[in-house]
Image (cartoon, rainbow, N blue to C red; front, side, top):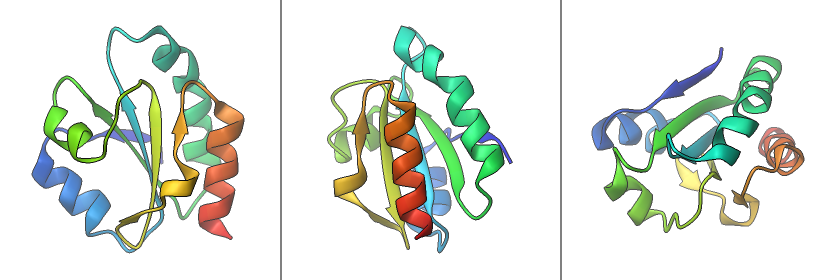
Length: 108
């Protein structure tokens, strides 16, 4: 499976908002050390949790998407179910355990 990078707002709408699958989106920046540190764990989760789509969005490249979701820190992990944001699952910071808890909640 793996984590796939979304490169446009239209692609975000197509793969996240219009998805009927649970989705985790990693909002990151290329210069962000904690983003790089947590990336291997997120890649591992993406391979271990079938039925959940994992994407990443570079906040510098798609700042309009990040702004629309109120992303103010990197990394921030946003969870979606049936195209709607599950706000109480949002994880700010490099917290793999928090992300895994969110994934399990999406699958419950």
